[in-house]
Length: 363
View 1 (cartoon, rainbow, N blue to C red):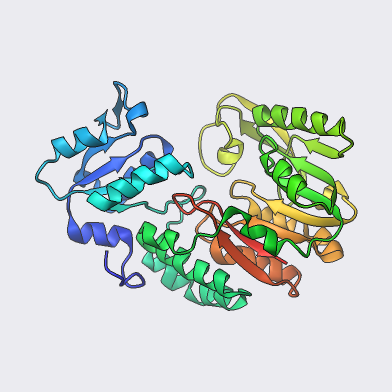
View 2 (cartoon, helix red, strand yellow; view 1 turned 90 degrees about the vertical axis):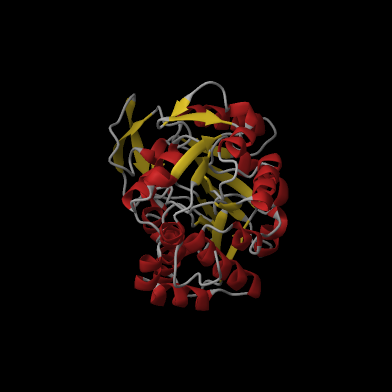
């Protein structure tokens, strides 16, 4: 695509080009992208579906035999086709293969929301340009402003050159967190304890931790890790719950893997259901909170509201994932600054496709 990224989005470009499309990847991401193509009348352009060599096997996806990239090139020999990547990854070997394909073919990684049905289209951008511009003005350093500019351009175009232009090293966040004072770390979306481990190893001022994780298999691993740390004198309180704007009970599906909240945030028919407690940060009565990480599968806005009193009282540093919903890139900043206007706001993206692993930091 050319650099008229504010006057044309990826879907408009594909409609204009009408070249054959090969989908790289299967599963939920591919389903979403096919559905978007269908809504634009572009489903007929899909000419092939391919997978990484270890995932080809003998299978059919949405009526297409899943083949390898080399087989795809043979099948479409002589045709100038476009590749759409339909999955997420931060694995170096996967990203290297994507770069290889991009050196040979026109390739895009479409931005489709993890949760919700609002696409980041040109129309969406134009309707929210004032809020986007205001968010850009709140960003506290050049790295953040560069990240935001390129991230918005990526979301419109699906062009990974914009993601490459806004990447920061994984450890860059510790420069933002150096002002952290002694106190409690609340990890919302703790998974199996990977981020608890990361921050305990790098932030000596954390004196206790509350880790919240809804998915039961991940929670079991988190609890085992917490028990291991307890033997070393480190206090971690683990809670198997969803995080929201008010307390209660919600029904979730245990068949969605890490995406336990997926069924909550969609109209999906629930299978293998169970009831789970919904907590708020304020309901935990956590005391002296120095740092909160929000990564709660599209429920960040509600979780911030549920932390209102804690934010007002403790003014914790906060890291908030901003890639789950299209509106997150401005609505989350609006929400936090409506509660407290004295935060400095930063943005960082670490290497990953699509634009996942992108966070606001409130310092």
